[in-house]
Length: 31
Image (tube, rainbow, N blue to C red):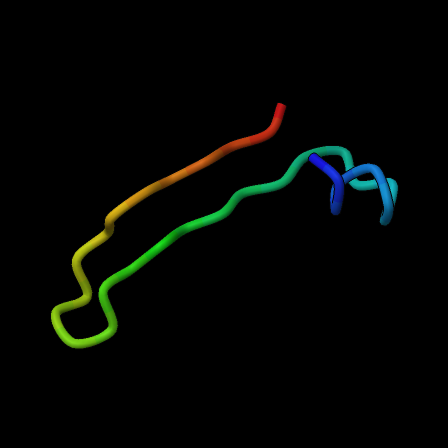
């Protein structure tokens, strides 16, 4: 949320992945 406000973005997405396997550990969409 901080980065979206700082750069006046309409929306933001964050993806956390395991680099070795490519497994997606977490997803976050704002708003």
